[in-house]
Length: 144
Image (cartoon, rainbow, N blue to C red; front, side, top):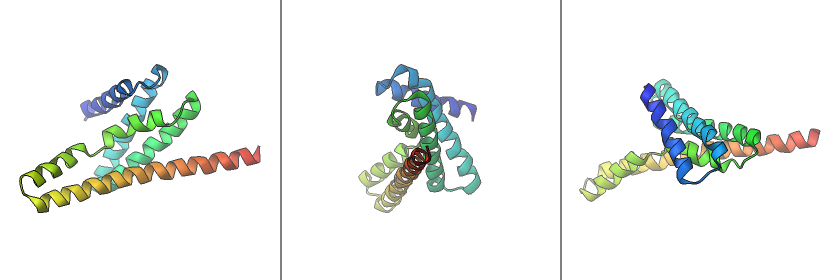
């Protein structure tokens, strides 16, 4: 289990390097991905649902991205993009395409639908946090 956390951190860090995010944000972007992956695994163990786990992982990415972006005064996209990489169901998408190519259409459709649902829940989790952050900022600025 510990090595998977290290792989999640490395994946997020290397994605940040590949995307040329500012060097001072690399560590926090890696932490964002690690927190997201850890939240994903905890929820997966509790509910046994990859879709719900992906949503909570995305919410974790969104919250950490908002926090780190405000602390370091950087755009949230640097943290969000690197943070969701460990959550992306790439192997499931690959297996879906492989099943289509080997004429196993029923399994391919099942895996493609699961991939689509997981990706949709990741996007929804990020959207919820982004909207909540904007509403919070709006009301915070009003009260000041």
